[in-house]
Length: 315
Image 1 (tube, rainbow, N blue to C red):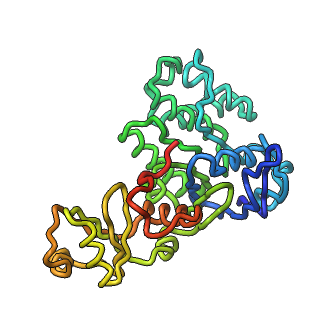
Image 2 (image 1 turned 60 degrees about the vertical axis):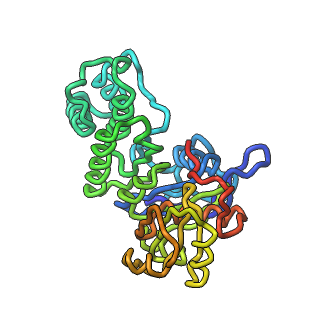
């Protein structure tokens, strides 16, 4: 569906995207993760042709973007784009008209989009009276108005409460089942885990790794993460070293990389005579993968020291 081939983009000689190559298969949800400045927004601007690559080529359905029908592409940007003085239905009808929808088809499609994002009851309300979360949902409805085949969602759940977020996740899953291809950027790792068929991890304009969650898990030298709370961290680390378990600091908590999940009673026995205030053992998730990949790319030594930042960069 969409393909980047050795795409680079620079501003005033400074590289923002560097030799980027990846592709989206028809009908999949592909997630782009990365800290601020990683190049996610630039990639979206390149796809929407607000920017042109310095080098390389972007194709949609095997044709250069410039030669592709714009109706194939729908974009819900991070910043809401609509007319605040118009009602929800008026906004949708206006944008549908821009894409050439006939009046009757435009009304029908507007009703479908409003229902899809749970705004049917607000159809006649002016946008300026909507809550921030409702405005985010309207932003997505506008992107769906012309029935695009490729949908770009730039942090779509920003500002949504948890119920609205789950509703939007359900809509995205429905769109995928209906055959729509979706490129999603997000800082919510659980969102990427639940929605994305494949995930690409960006850093400083380069694609560090990509693949399904199962494939990305293979990048971590462990199958499980043991997180502990103890009054004697150095002793816990020393015991773990005898077991050949590497240690990390995740979110300010001491953690160990285990070759496979183990029952807690066996773990406690291995750490005798040390006692714990708490300990949990769970499978490697996307947060651990993200931290490992980006910090190694940045040249940070492993294991991560306790003095390093312990939160995933947020927007």
